[in-house]
Amino acid sequence: MTTQYVPPKVWVHNTGGGNKWASINRPVSGSTHEKELPVGKHALQLYSLGTPNGQKVTILLEELLAKGLKEAEYDAHLINIGDGDQFSSGFVAVNPNSKIPALVDKSGDEVVNVFESASILVHLAEKFGVFLPKSGSARTTTFNWLFWAQGSAPFLGGGFGHFYAYADEKFEYPINRFAMEAKRQLDVLDKQLSKNTFIAGEEFTIADIAIFPWYGNLVLGKLYDAAEFLQVETYTHVMRWAKLLEKREGVQRGRIVNRSFGEEWEQLANRHSAADIDAVLAKKPK
Ligand SMILES: N[C@@H](CCC(=O)N[C@@H](CS)C(=O)NCC(=O)O)C(=O)O
Image (tube, rainbow, N blue to C red; front, side, top):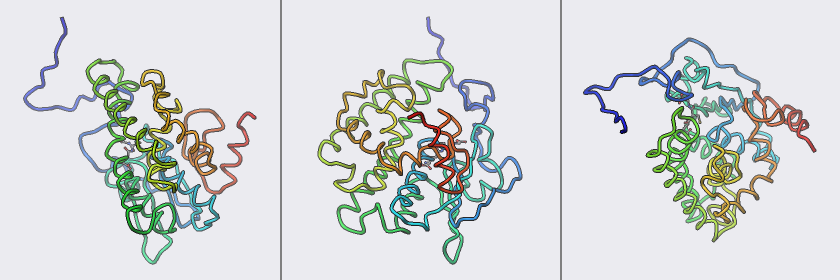
């Protein structure tokens, strides 16, 4: 006999376990403590963590630098969400939603706070005039897939990843529901990538940068350890694209920034110059 959960009349916050994020999740927003954010010497100050949403921004910044755009130099400060750094007064002042990534751009006449990873990608792509077509259907197609990523990835992360990888107890119902959706999304991408080299056509854009850290990492076996469960190798076009992207210098450099997990050569807590990344990558076994 299965015991069924019967919702009470009024929801109450259960501060107990259930998953690895139970201790930081709250039903309210706002700061929990007074603390200023650290500030480095560059005009671009990034506050982030090397999760897929964080990787989007550091990959773009490293792609910009790989193109020789020196104004894209940045300081990236680690926000440890497990420790509740996203609830400091300083972080909340930049992003009232208390989620990484958040960017402070001090390069212009006024300081601009940017949050939501896609907003940061658009802000930087427009500022530097690259990785986002200027007009026409190519621009709209890039936005289509950028917003597709923002709308779809929470089903992969908050849905599939949460119940398959993070929840203390494994339940068939949510795992089935979200595995189905994850596979449907991979199929959508596979069909799109059967027609083009990159997501939005023959040009590498911020749509690729937004989608790779989730779906690229997933098929490469670097997310949730779910490659076999989801039979990722059957999405041959997604796999081809993921392997193409993982060879890019910007991707290899950006994916290790603000990362506090994985191998020693994949972890760079704070980044202030290119040399910081070089030193970590030098540890990679040949
Ligand atoms: N839609 C947001 C999602 C950002 C997000 O979910 N960030 C997570 C880490 S990947 C976070 O900061 N979580 C902390 C929390 O929920 O308290 C974006 O794309 O920027």
